[in-house]
Length: 286
Image 1 (spheres, helix red, strand yellow):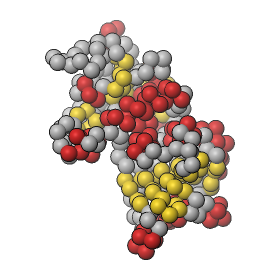
Image 2 (cartoon, rainbow, N blue to C red; image 1 turned 120 degrees about the vertical axis):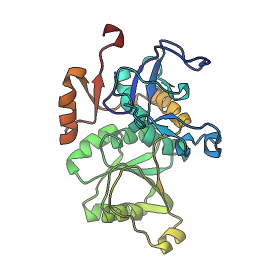
Image 3 (cartoon, rainbow, N blue to C red; image 1 turned 180 degrees about the vertical axis):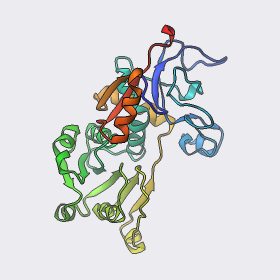
Image 4 (cartoon, rainbow, N blue to C red; image 1 turned 135 degrees about the vertical axis):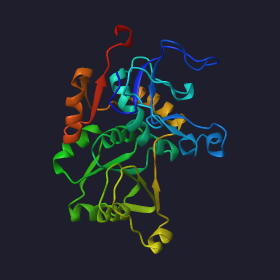
């Protein structure tokens, strides 16, 4: 099964000469990147997602995983753990890897208070990963109706981000804030205020709004605002193993290829909860 984007999963059908890291018949996933230079300073440090020569899976005429076959550098064909259902692994290849990578980079775990902003495709996975890592988890949403669901995914606390009193109550409490949704300028300011000394805000969701912070607050409180795009190869591999070991699964809706137009309509409406997975017929049956 693969989903209608660049990320997906499938079975290895053929290998190029010299490939030894995977074999025909292996279950693998494909994420954001299809290759990197492998020789620059960032690649040598395991930060291949920051390589200037990194190539996205869906650019330069490539259709990503939205097709029957994907031709990709073997390094980026990531093994899906035995027993973990492929339909759940597909959405992990982008959303799962993107939220998991900063957790791994900063060793988020027991004793850390971490906020997740936005309970959607990325946010619902972030809540699960953080709870499994032993963090104290805060879910932030402007939709109070999502509280029960957020707690079900792993949140210990729910904060209505549109409620001034609730936002004041968490001022200075967080070590990290993972922002998976686009916010207004005021929304970003509220999350920056929720950070304690040395706190870090990781921005994953896109927005056209600016982010403002006083240099005095930035310096005296040692706060950090950081963008986080995708995941390096090593953390993506760890994410799949971690998800399998801790039963972290995206909430999905599965569709057949014949339903592709329905899928895109639901995505446009914003009614998919929380990832739509498109299953292609087995290529051998064509």
